Image (tube, rainbow, N blue to C red):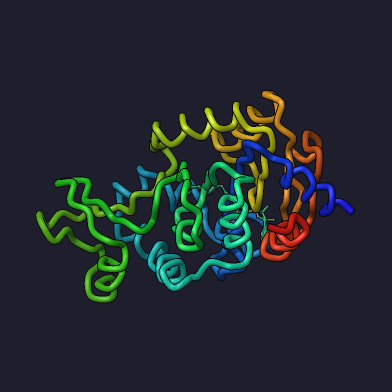
Length: 247
Ligand code: OAD
């Protein structure tokens, strides 16, 4: 019944917008940050994922990032990613704003993907600015720790993700808030909605008149604001919604 209502709202959307978080990629095998089995239940994010920590000790950063990187590089889009791509193709979504850095939305066929926390698929040398694919750096982590820049030999090779203490990509965040203000339906999937400013995106959409739909495995701070809350797995709920909308 709730899924039926969500399908009706999304099916009638003219400027639908999705915001996704780590939960969308959980069924592709990439662990979330919070919630059951989350990365931050094992590590302190301020230590592991802050720019200060990285600059103080790139080896320590890479020793944690190494495992997550190999999982993410091998991951494939799941039915939740494919369903979101289908909603864009059929004109129900104008874009997917994502806090994820794994590139799985693009791999599933979504065309307008706004990465507000950057991308882990590329690594940049903070000394000389040279960029390399993450896979190339990943391949030499067993021999070289921390990995060194192939051009200048520097040790500050950082994935182009936003670490704590770093600014967000300005153009991406501006585009996301513009689309949120224009949205008539705002779909939030697989995010704990506790990291700002990304969590403000659905708030701005709702205040600008969008109907808010939250699909998440656990409660979120925005559930009370939502027109519809669906507690479940995105890889199951989203394909069901696409099926109900029917093309
Ligand atoms: P979180 O790990 O905080 O939240 C993921 C949410 O997804 C949790 O509430 C889970 O209950 C839910 N979940 C898990 N599996 C799911 C499934 N199959 N279907 C639906 N929901 C599921 O992830 P984010 O909200 O994305 O920051 O985290 C936000 C930011 O915090 C990340 O971008 C990262 C992190 O520190 C940066 O990298 C800057």
